[in-house]
Amino acid sequence: MAGRQGTAAASPLDALASRLGHRFRDPSLLVQALTHRSFGATQNERLEFVGDAVVNCVIGTALYARFTDLDEGPLSRVRAALVNQDTLARVARDLDLGSLLRLGEGERRSGGAERNSILADAAEAVFGAVFLDGGFEAATAAIHRAYGDTLAAADPGILGKDPKTNLQEWLQARKLQVPEYAVVATRGDAHAQVFDVECRIAEMGCVTTATGSSRRAAEQAAAAAALAQLVAHRPGGVRARR
Image 1 (cartoon, helix red, strand yellow):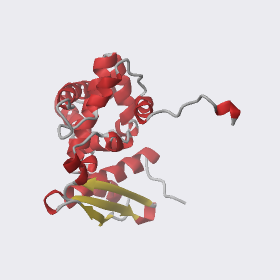
Image 2 (cartoon, rainbow, N blue to C red):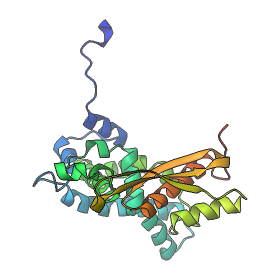
Image 3 (cartoon, rainbow, N blue to C red):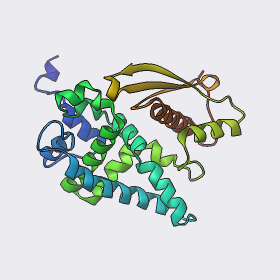
């Protein structure tokens, strides 16, 4: 016990900075990046504007270097799939941004911390904050770190299509059963409901859950998460749980 005296637990913001791999010289930028317009006048929309450009550039550069035989059209489609709202929201969830968002009381009560649009905007704002605080090299490292397997597993043959279609085609090509989808929870007021949907691939032991502002959106996000999980486990095939 004595050896632990004087060691303070990392704050939630410090933990997020660690997940990003960036130590902020100006922590107020990170606070601003996590502040929704419903919370107050100093909010994250300007940082989101910067982050949008930075994410597009970093992901585009990574794809250019990796897929040397692809022309502009296919590269653009793959990039669009990696920087769209659903993908950015998944990145935000992996970073646990929802628990750190500063939202107005009404927005929080209506499930704003789990809404894809708010999470995606916050992710872009956070990357924008890293860029302004540490420059392009720091932002590049943070984006690559946050995207992780999602970027590593990017496949031009499937990205740009509907996620449910991608997953079904991927499974059928391996003579596996198609997934089952089920709504496991519904929250929020009637005008701003949030749906939790489960995507289950029984024979693979794969179960993913995603949240969306509609059942369809949640199903698409759950399907995308399932495919990312399967591809990340074994790029050349699949690996069932034992």
